[in-house]
Length: 95
View: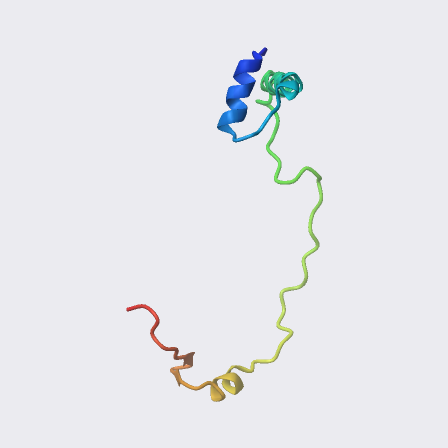
């Protein structure tokens, strides 16, 4: 897709980019290449390709789901300023 330098200057103004006149041709070329690449990607038939959750086919090692800490709930509740029915009581912050 070809652009005119005036169009590139307008896009740059909308994006709040301060481009000099000498930079317009380079940006025009780069933007045209990007849009050509997007069109090439759109042309690929991906209907039979299965979506991936990750680009590498790896599986994460999972640790065993077992309790490793001792229950210290009563100890922590005992030092809390205010508790009720096994819960911490805190000041109301929303009216």
